Image 1 (cartoon, rainbow, N blue to C red):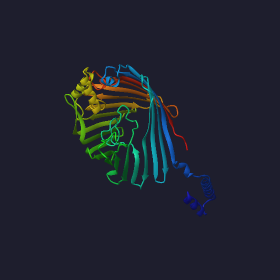
Image 2: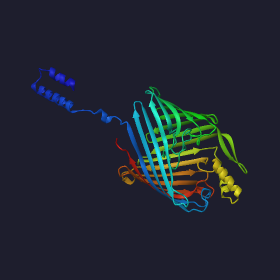
Image 3: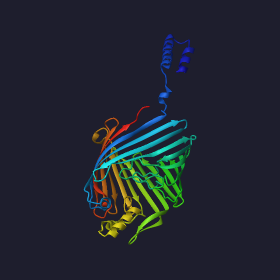
Length: 440
């Protein structure tokens, strides 16, 4: 615009009309410049942030009173359990110079109608750490941090330094581990478009990180290297401890089209303490362990998202061994029941013990053309014994800062199968959630 004004002012030989138009444009431009002001501070991030949610949840469980886990949980027949629960999650952030401090706390309260069970509460910091940006490529963190490794949606075979996902609710936030970590990132002008690497030092003492890792270890050292080539993410992982030596893992995720993505994880742990069922005892021995996961996401033309994953754990008990364990737990002989309880304590009998597991989910937004109404249906299937668990969910967030969610679950399976021996065979759950973010 300045060049146009100069051109007009210098062209004194032009017509009066041009001068008039030029004067008008320049005057308007000058006036706009005088009236327009830009408040940079309005666009700067506030040093403080505080946000979170508060939940009220009511649930009804129909107990499978003849199942193995029902008999191991209750000392008398129980047909149903009704529960009320509350949850408060707080997230806070404070920034200064090149640093920031972050926390995420979780407070839970639960009460059910079982006799002799009192109100239970729990409060914890799931994350609490300080981080600083050393320069444009390097970042340093110290504190309790929840890492998210791997590409799996329902399971995380390569989650060497994170807690296991709950496949029935994989998006739940999880508690982190206390650690020191540093991360390097770099954008590149090559076929490898970006690269990053991180190193994590996790101490293990009688006070921190001692429940999830071997107490004989004093520390863990872990790392991750990531690269982006085209539309494919590649991740390599490792974890070294004094007891289990070096675990390694690999993940990938690639978009074959804008609607179709496929992904996979594989981990190898050379020295894992593995329980084994003998005739009259449980034996622990060091064995190598492999876990693999392969899956895809697909978005259809009518806006339905499909997620499919298959996980294979060849080192877990065979279907015949699982059937034998269920028979022991159903036995009326005390020594068999004792052996089944020992198997449960060792991790042979419990969740996450199937060799083959399948997860499938379909979800859509604005279901039935109703704004803010989301619907989903997902299933967990054990293809070895044919048992399964299915959950349907409806959620509505049409009221500002509020969300209602209704879930109904049904478990299907005959006797001596994974989902036929679970604690409950049906569950109904209603949750109200309120989101908040005060302005400072």
